Image 1: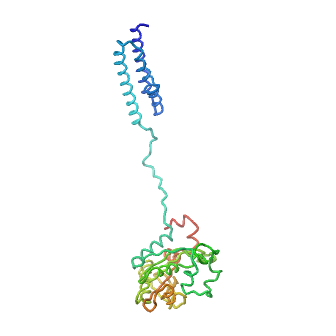
Image 2: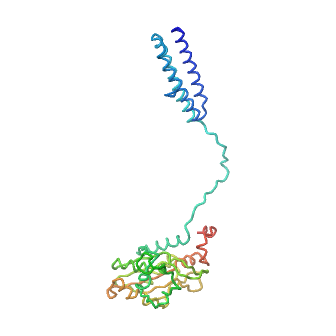
Length: 341
């Protein structure tokens, strides 16, 4: 083959490469097909354009200038065709099924807070406005905080093993352990660490081995309040509970105290409430002035400070607020019931 025929053959192969490359890039319908066409024609290692570039070495020196000019034109044209194909695929119209915008939408299911969570949040807000902060404490307690520091002697019926959830020895808290039977334990922990004045509420789960029925559960929630300062009286206690009851149950709620006995308060009272639409007084909890022995147990001087404490059942408050007649409804995960709140 003479030099002229070699140049003509090389230019013919370049023209075939131009046509093949443009066709393959234009016909690519997705990114995978486009990538295959790019590798075949413009690949840096074994692409057809690379092979055509290497052919330049086999030409006579006089033919290389013409071949080089033609090669650069083909290369530029194929690179532009590749860019055009990429833009075409990037802006391709996505075919979707038509949507009837007049049809009603599908309403997403939105979660709700549990009624007890709602109640406890509201109780915290109400007592927060009355100047009480929220204190936390462990649910696994020792006998000292659950009984002894609260002036409940070992002979008291409240400490009977049949009325408490005692845990095996060595539960990791240094003493005989138990599930707390009252949130009053938190009050002791607060007073052990904080000098007067103290104004806190403790709210959370407590445990007692009661038979489950419409009004009892082995696990329920309590809110306990404590205020200790100079000159605190029963009048302060009744004022706080009256303000709370009116804020939570309505402005027409009335409060009365009935004499009672609790080891950790002296004097002690049962707290009854009467509100609009109710024909009888309803017992809501217990209260009283903090017993001097409790103050001494935490290092307070009962000659210098006095205080009051109260305890209310969260489930009982929630049931009275919403007219719920069975405590078991709170724990059955009945979505139909929970959606009412």
